[in-house]
Picture 1 (tube, helix red, strand yellow):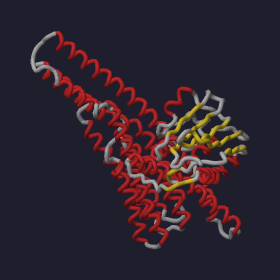
Picture 2 (tube, helix red, strand yellow; picture 1 turned 135 degrees about the vertical axis):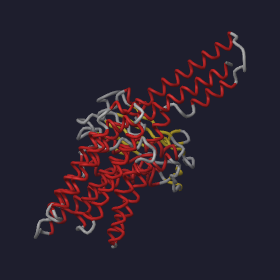
Picture 3 (spheres, one colour; picture 1 turned 60 degrees about the horizontal axis):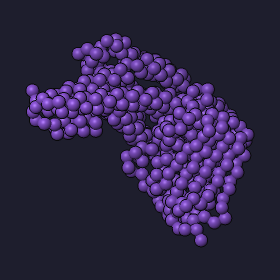
Length: 482
């Protein structure tokens, strides 16, 4: 057999093995997540049944909850035999799992149509949030399988949105539009997770490159040079596979951390909202109490909106659909807007903010809203990772043909090993449950992407834990200082 054919056969064999490993990894992921999905489904269904216990016939509620439990139990039962993942019926197991997931989504969609629609606005908002949390967990769990999140999202949120449209009225129509937007957001996020899996499996650019080099080998011959070329190809392929495996393990670890934080961040607002709803259901409440309950719901919904908007911004930037509204700007105006947005969080932790601006600054070209978002994210990050009563310094200087914006604090600092990945998506310097300060770990990634869209750069500096941190944003100026 000629050397080229031998190399190409080896490459095709490795590709087939790698593809099988990828599919097995998908099924292993579903297998590991089944117990958690089972518990979350039962708990969410129980919450809905308890909230509506006095508003619907209890027999129907128990029947619906029993269906939720049975379909969740079906997914869990099919995942109990890990050996099935590596036998011939593995594909049939996957189809059964997705079939139970679709039926599970249909039951939640039926709850939206028959149980949620028609309730008072506050209660319907709470029930909608429960459904959104369930849908988010299902979408991210199924994300490594392309298109699989829609198996749950369409019957669950799609049916509920259809019921709201049929009900009519401004509030139901707005809720239906928000659900449609959320389905699009979750689909885009799931697609990004899927691509991360595909890229880290080493099946994309690396393999064609090796194949192309293999075609350049002599068509025949068994000389020492041919053997050396073959050995180099095998070594390169081995190194590529090792790098792909390390990248996959790191991506999988960060994804698991992100899922845990996302669940935490989505769960936190539900407690205050539920308490406020329970208060609003009491008869003869004074106006002050109703106003307090409405303000609690408003604050928590605003928190959820910020999380969704950040995710949507990242998704648009990654897909190249993000547009800037550029104009000539005074950097002082950017600083003023950012400080105004971040001051409540800074004052809430009793920090001292010191702002230093030069007398004259060149103008910069950019999007005022997005540049203020960049500086505000850095200020919020400093406030979040600085102990109460700390110091934050915001300094602007003219640096060459650009403007440097520095945000420095005397807070927790950044470990040296975390600095290289501090701007990576879903990355946080410390994510342990006792130190996590909230957020999804996308703020700094969004900062870097927005700054790069403006033709600038951003750097992070820290002397280590407990020594504070400094972030420097450099933006090119549009005019020279006079």
